[in-house]
Amino acid sequence: MKNGLFKKFYITTVISVAICFSLLMVLTYALSSSHLSNEKQELLSENCKIISSTTTKIVGTVNFRQYISSVISVLSSSIDADIFVTDVNGNTFICSCSEWNNKNYCTHSQSKISEKILKKTLAGEYYECGNFQGKYKQIHYTYGYPLYNSAGEVIGAVYASSPASNQRVYLNGFIKIFFFCSAVSLVFLLIMVYAVTSRFVRPLKLMSQAAKKMAQGDFSQRIIVNSNDDEVGELANAFNDMTNALVKIEGTRRSFIANVSHELRTPMTTIGGFIDGIIDGTIEKDRHEYYLSIVSAEVKRLTALVYSMLSLASLESGEMKPNLETVDIHNVICTTLISQEQRIERQSISVEGIDSVDEVNVVADSGLIHQVMYNLIDNAIKFTLPGGYIKFSFEKTEKYVKIIIRNSGEGIKSEDLPFVFERFYKGDKSRSVNKNSTGLGLYIVKTIIEINKGTVSVASKEGQYTEFTVSLLLA
Image 1 (cartoon, rainbow, N blue to C red):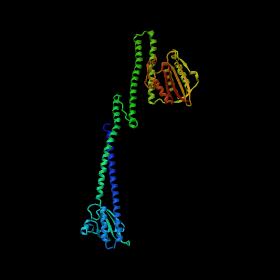
Image 2: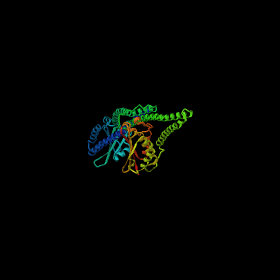
Image 3: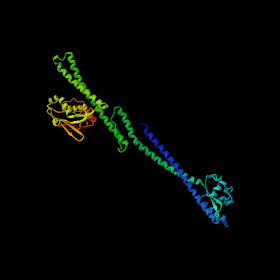
Image 4: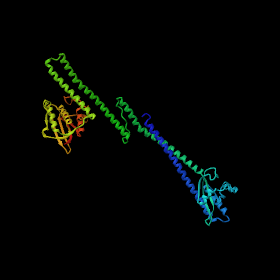
């Protein structure tokens, strides 16, 4: 980003605009020159034809030369052109230039009109842009037209020649005005492009700086969004959202590491202490069985934790693919409840609604759905206070089956509800005396349900209940 995008865009814009203005200037000059040339040709043509028609009417009269001389003199001054008349052999016998008026001969009469030019003129008309047989040192527009007598016979030709310098003076003045206006417009445009480009590039530079700080672990910087209706504004908003998500993930990661470290350290310390006590004789032999049972329970806790972490790794890597088949979800729930019968009885929890149906078939992966129901039921038992209840209900729609699991208890705080399905998240641990949780269970539930083409949601009322609703495809 250092001088990169802004410099490239600005230089590209300057060059593009300069090329466009140059092309516009060249095209304008060429088209204007062509247009003026055509206009000059038409002007010379009209005047030559006027002289020709006048000549036809007065040819052979006594005052022919005098009258024609006065006509071409008037027309010559009005159109700023030399007008001279020749016979059929190309000899000039009347001219409007001042030299002719003074000496009765001039540059135009010093040499005959070439046979090639005369032939074209007498045949109809002649036009050129040049020095006309070397009669002029500068470029002139010259037009020739035949003269006729009253019988329609060609008796000579009339030529009108106007300097091209007049047109060039006009064009040069026009180009100067055009160049000045273009320069002012270009400066204004470049200032606007600079301002707009700086405004567009600034968020990108800030994002680059913020990304570098994020790579060093600093997530504090946010991009100020000046507009939300363009792509740069959307990108800045997306960057801020990403930063907020990374902050949240980083906090969750640290919390998870702390939780897992605690969960691993506690049973390992317990196991190590009891095993050492048994080995060195600190614990008496008649108490070995009691302490070994505690060691066994701690090992099971470690196994469950490791299994949850492995499941999480499989889900996130995409290795766990569902094998969709028809599954009796009612039977899965009953099997899971039987496996947890001792815990349920120990806490005097009543189970309701399970006998309201006999069979509920869904389309899902049998093994994965067993894990989902185990996690949800385990969660319900964990956070149901002694003497409470767990209630099951089933609702069928056209395509789905809703499995609703409600448990009494302290419920989930409203500020924790949006995050219960996020990985590593653990809400207020004071909701229950049972705190054996790593914050992975519900994230695994949500991920499994989604890959089985279903949905899961949660609702809760503090001090009363927590309710999870799972929707699966009806078989």
